[in-house]
Image (cartoon, rainbow, N blue to C red; front, side, top):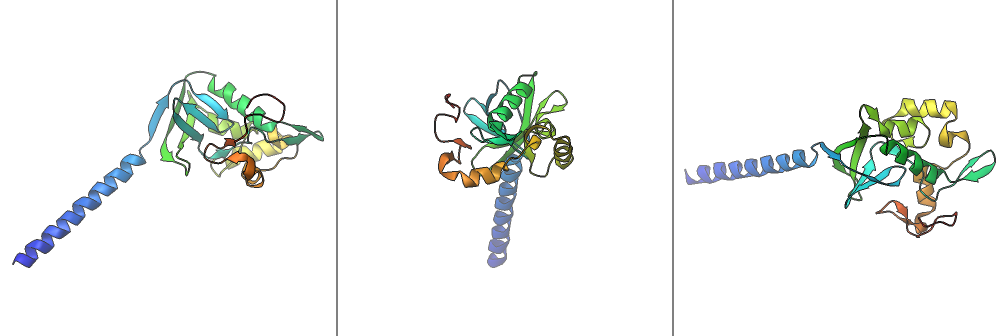
Length: 184
């Protein structure tokens, strides 16, 4: 009889621990809304106070990344940051998400009203998709919009080739200047 009580008690304790762990996972993945004055870090990264955000489903050129247009280099990374800054400054912006990337940044989708900023970055050709906005990427490519107007290296490949100059945790160049002489 005592063995059955111990076994049942042990099973109940395991069940309670499992329920606790499941509730913690659900809470960690819960969608939260963040509102405020965001600082644009680059074409797909934001900061709000000390909290860092990464736009979910897209990848924009890095700040020091150059692309080719009309046979000449242009700083597509700075252009992506400028476009994101314009979208973020277009009105009251809410960013929604809850999961974190491997660098601890919150993965979010940002909206100015019904305007999906992540989607628009891909649509205007200033970011590529990670699979969330395939139709928008096809349209941007067909229209030769933004980075599609010439030759470019996908940001993930550019980071891999330039790893020595990248602080992967921050997802920005580790040197304090850009290629055009200004402070980064």
